Length: 157
Image (cartoon, rainbow, N blue to C red; front, side, top):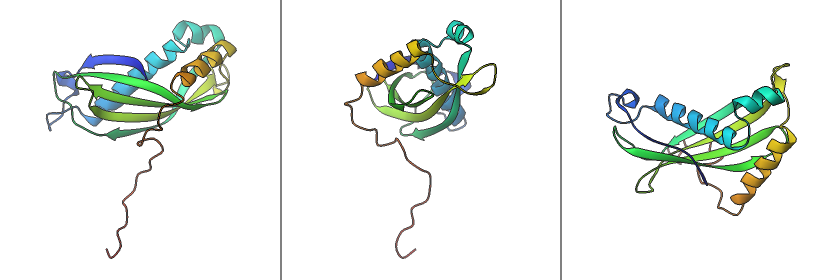
């Protein structure tokens, strides 16, 4: 996985339970996503140059272990799947002891800025996506990826 973002939990991110608020996790993962797209060669300058941007279609966050004010974290990311217009991105937030704190599974799509409709990644960006994905291709599929929300029905209840 690639390091995308490192930071410390600040007071504004903490809720009445004295840990990072759920909305703060989404913001952190969103910022890590910007770092990811910058690394792919789709920063603001390139988006303007190519006339292509990236929209988030869906994000699923799983909370594993709480993190509190003043604690440091790092977000790592990898590509699970991709095609010419979409990226299935998986990110993990870990603390300094390498404990998993949360995960985010996100579907990103290339968007033609002029038409505001689905587009495709420029060739150079697509090559970067392929290289990025290849680096982690052999890693085990994350257990949090592809999960759905629901209450499991137990027999006899």
